[in-house]
Amino acid sequence: MEMKNIAQMLQSFRDDLPCSSKTAAAIDRGASLEEISELAEEEGLHKLASVLFEAEQEALREGPGAVEDPAEATDSYLHEIRKELPAGSKTAAAIDRDASWEEISEIAEEEGLHQIASVLFEAEQERLRVP
Image (cartoon, rainbow, N blue to C red; front, side, top):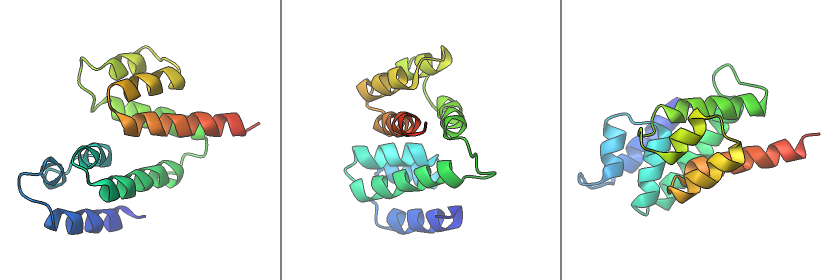
């Protein structure tokens, strides 16, 4: 899914959201797909969260300058997502100390950062499948 298509899809979802919606506010200020997805999930907008999750996965697989190595793509994802995490986040601290993906995933799950946990779980599964 190209970014243009994602932007159009976000706008169509946005048009149906009330102004008080945190998801709507995130879309309006051009927040990351990760943040919009997390807020959508919190607000029960599971379809939107699911579509954004798929778009993120595709971007990781085929992203700009498509990173061939899945481990590199996952490390790049962690580096990018780290910038958006608050200083007191245990997930951020785990990323900063270069913890294993499994540990970061568990901590992210505890903190309710399901998207991060899911991406890391998938990456770990992929790493186990590749000889």
